[in-house]
Length: 192
Image (cartoon, rainbow, N blue to C red; front, side, top):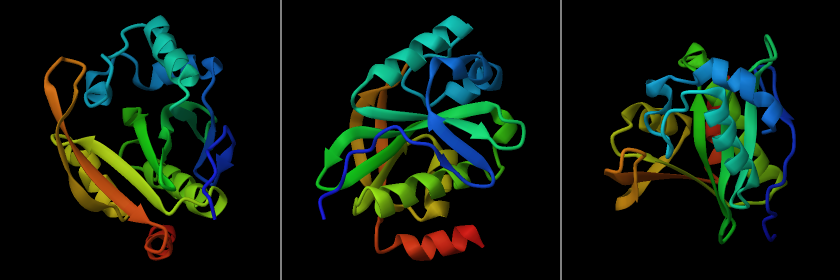
């Protein structure tokens, strides 16, 4: 089977609803994580200090053909608390990346991240026909690395001086992968 490119779609479970990112999400997103340097610490753009700055970043992401971005809307309350994307679309050889993810602090250490990854990875394997999901993070972002390992990501290597951080320093990028045949065991563990 040839994998399909992702398109904007709504994905939901009992914790979150992933909606195609739209400019209407910006006020909630800014309330969730605007001006918070820790939220934006590992992102490829400086911390947005105003709603207009966040709107500019969101508009760029929406317009970028290499990303399919989703607003992360918490079902309890219906507010957008972050975003996540299928990244580097169309990817390579039936592989797709999940990245450009951030969440407001109010949902850190909750079921939000796991719920989002369950939806995105299930969709990538079951509906789009990919055989591999790639997740990457800054070598210094140990919180993200631990979260990726917890959902089943296997360390595949580190790209040295892969890209510049928002502050101009070089970032080494840690790469993790999950294969389609590995996912059912991880899904069962994460869903129990």
